[in-house]
Length: 114
Length: 111
Image (cartoon, rainbow over all chains, first blue to last red; front, top):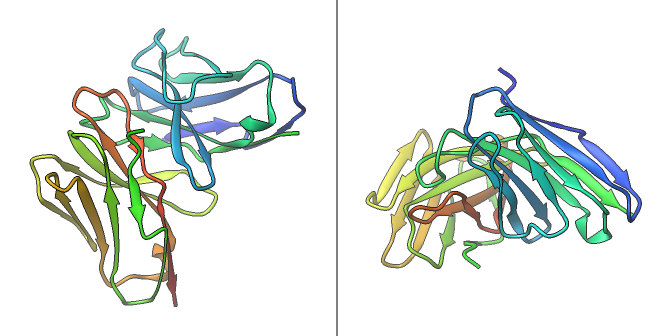
């Protein structure tokens, strides 16, 4: 089993460009999450999904959109990238609710916006 | 913010010594989890302790939880160079769909 995979691993964008980050999991998990990690800030939740076809906002959702068309995939989109979105992005999944279950993380995508 | 805070921010010890790191949080929780992150990698789950538990062990890891003080500690005994990583606590409030992560403790174990 691959667990949680993310593509791409690295990306450099110019301000105003758009891109989509793909997360895939093969554990049949219902819950999926997108986080960003910045130095000294820990992980902050961007958006999450509690099942196929559902999405919800997290702590820092502005400037991002997400879609969960298939249970195994969770896409994170940046419509018009800004330098403030330079960060490392992590996808995670879990079997169920956070207050009962551990989360499994992907290896991360390092995004630089110039 | 419900984000927890780890203390210390950085810790450097000799191989074989014990490492203790602490986490404080602000709201009532259902569980508290500890994760490890090796440099350039994703987070890996270490241990989950529920609000009605006071102590939990897993191999060389010992976690305590004091809900009255809103704090937890992670003890790594007989540390190894491979334990060098950042360690994060994460809390889940009752009914929450997501975790809130702390800012992490950077542990360096010197061979």
